Amino acid sequence: MAAKLPEAWRPALAAHGVWDDLVRLAERAAVTPDTAPAPERLFRALDLVPPAAVRAVILGQDPYPTPGHADGLCFSVRPGVAPPRSLRNIFREMETDLGLAPAAHGNLESWARQGVLLLNTVLSVRLGDANSHARWGWQKVTDGIIRTVADLPQPVAFLLWGKSAEAKTALIGPGRHLVLTAAHPSPLSARRGFFGCRHFSKANDWLAAEGAGRIDWRLP
Image (cartoon, rainbow, N blue to C red; front, top):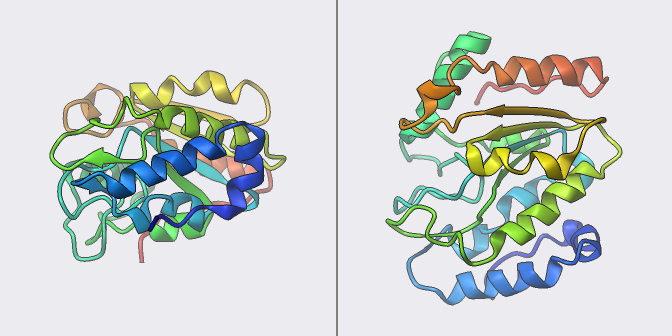
């Protein structure tokens, strides 16, 4: 199996009863043709952000189905790939919220390096067919990931974009963490509640108040 399993997450995911499911789905993705992202990037979001480093979670639906786009981080694309429309809408909201000019690229790895877990509710997709792996059972695994983050001792800002992400609010529960919900930044829904949500400044203000420091949303 070519997938790089996120060993730092293994104890918590095993405790939530989903580690074996994660391994099974990684094996299935590795042998299923026309699956994105590439197996070695399937768990990149978890590889870049171990549990102890999580400061924020951005939760989307599933990877980009366009060939060459999905890179294992939700909404992110590989260097050299033009930002897709959903990501351009994210940049538009960042400009309104933070005054940041849209980036020339769509690689969001610098966010992950600061503790932003860029997660989708479904971690793989068939090329050309959005949400096509929704019935594989990924939601059980990602629910376990969300519960793991909700159990962490540090404050975490959850940015839940779209209906499939918003449905996970109950897994987080009230209390220690910040939960922000908005429409998906897709061109089909961005005008119905994503534009104007100001999630970037709200997350930073809350993290700063909690003593966790602000995230630099600029892309180098």
